[in-house]
Length: 389
View 1 (cartoon, one colour):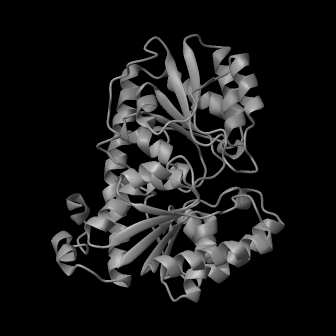
View 2: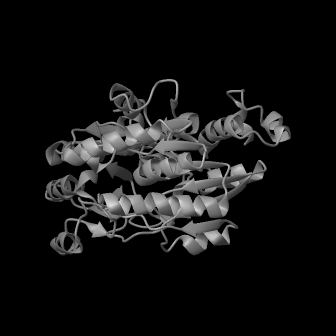
């Protein structure tokens, strides 16, 4: 049996879905991917997976273009003949599900976050609501990455309690992301922002907070790691970033697939986002025993326990963010170390990728049963069995 994993980018698949795909493959299924082509295509192939290219306009809302997307998904499904599809991100959740339903292919959808369309509610929000409502009726299961998003969809009658569930994000490889000794910036305290350079991620507030803190403290660095070419209405321009770097507010580190090397050389990871599903950057930083700062919003407050493994601040407030940064700077080294230790404990307890993989495997086995020997080996009904996966 074949299982297709679909996302809006090969980058997303390579960074967030590869471990899941490998475990599904180990269980006896054939796994392949469908996503728009980008630089991560060859890396996925190097891991022994077939990946099919598809064009998805990440910003488009053209009805004719979207119909073409559905038709293209149908063509790929007829060519590849999957028994089940796993969708991640908005457009695959909607259009791949609709295409699969025409061919009687079951789907499991995962809402990784509500995105800009629900942060700024307008006409487009109503259209997306309608599309979700229609497409999600066709899905076998809809997963969310936090209870608040799930309840949001239940209240809008897009999903029901019975056909939905919660997974703790995409999980973290706690062997890869582990405590490491700092090798750079040893003479500075480094705050690190990791993510797409979007204003909805709180980039403006991060810049303003950096200016406030650097006017008061020496030997403090504010770094930013992530792509500047994301397709999004709230994208930070290269000119914006150039001006901030020249002004001395921040150090821009570009983007990297080896994010752990940058986390190891930071002292605190910061995410002042307006809304999240379950932020991978905070989970990975927590796994590496770094204290955290994030906004008190959906998704972020699932990861950061104020005063325990980091600090929460108000969204869209540079002053509140600067205050949280100042609180972090004023802590004794031993206090920050305890915060970091608690951060890793929380990730191991709730967000290890093995927990996530176990949840998907249970659902896959229910929909397209296969390889009962594997199922009994890992006893997926046992809450502690994820330790074996």
